[in-house]
Amino acid sequence: MSEEKQIEIKDSDVFILAAVRTPLGSFGGSLSSLSAVELGAITIKGALEKAEIKPSQVDEVFMGNVLQANLGQNPARQASIKSGISDKVPATTVNVVCASGMKAVSLAAQSLALQQNEICIAGGMESMSNAPYYVQVKKKNLCNIIPSFSFRLFFLIFNFFFFFWSLSQMFYNSNNMTLKKKKKKKRNYRFGVRFGDQTMVDGLTKDGLWDTLAHKEHAFDNEILPIPILNPKTKTKDIVSIDEGISKLNEEKMRQLKGAFPITNDAYKSHPNIAKDKDNHPIYTVTAANSSSLSDGAAALVLINGKKVKELKCHSKLLAKIAGFADAAQEPVRFPATPSLAIPKALKHAGIHDVSDLNENDWFEINEAFSVAGVANARILKIPMERVNALGGAIALGHPLGCSGARILCTLITTLKLKKGRYGVAGICNGGGGASAIVLQNI
Image 1 (cartoon, one colour):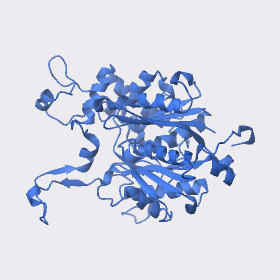
Image 2 (cartoon, one colour):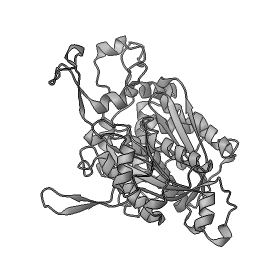
Image 3 (cartoon, helix red, strand yellow):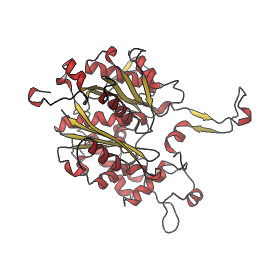
Image 4 (cartoon, helix red, strand yellow):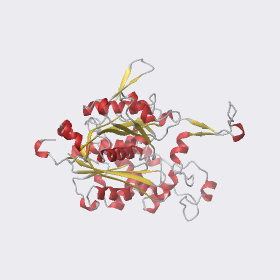
């Protein structure tokens, strides 16, 4: 931050000193040998090094993590200690499904604004590749050493795809949201391709220049931490530095994919939440191509309050100010559109009356667990699509659940720097009908 960009700093202001993430690995891909805890520890350590903050200066750690089975107690605590932070520093694991990483940042920001803490680490971590299986144990066998193998269920499916209220899959409700917003499968497909294009080309180019990859243009260099991974075949370490998902984008296959609904027609007819045509047949709009992919990854941010900034005289290192944040909720089946409720609340918390007060210098990151999330929220809030997910979103990059809320903040900061933006607004929905949003002010 140059002298001419000096801003008045209050003790209760909250700033971002560093924001880093791992590359996002595909399901069973390059990062699958690392647990969520290991991924989290890597980003915490990397964020501290980038911020030039010593582990001994950290007051508290908040990390989002959703699929916690088989990780052991308090994964955030494990990641914190593994990164080199003292065991005297408290750590909290946050789980509000997809919004976990962003909620972790909000909780850290609250503690800093209240001056309970001065420096915090906040972010999220997930290894969807390492999600285990359940084995259902019959009640009469609870005390037996060997459980009954009457039922096995992939932990990821139950804890991510099913709503707590009705046990209806998120696919179905995204499908209905698509139809309510009059977004047919073709529009969902176009949106998926668009986000893929934007990830693969520099900035807002939309003419299919596949050879000008954002990674080749080094757009993500400031946020991605290259990770050495042992190659079991060569016994040497390969450096993973690029998101795996973008390399698998195939527009022709995207056109041909059928609806992603693993359920029989009989089940459709009896399910009250499934959209049907006039002949009572299920309507397909959500496909694997316009849905985010299962991924592995972590992201971490170093947050500091104004009082500590003045003490350390680190004004020149500040990336952005956290101007406001908020959560919102509504009926679970409408979860994809809930960011449209959280974003206005966060803007008001930041002292901005409405989305209409923002201009072409302001940018948005709206996590698209399904493409309809980006389409619907942008249309509801009347946000021009060219200002949403300018470098690509979860459809192209991937969606490691507990990480994504923090990951989009890292990418939002990158966008603000590349575009010389003013404000950045991030919103993310979560299963169960909730959403979180954060407003950043570029510095």
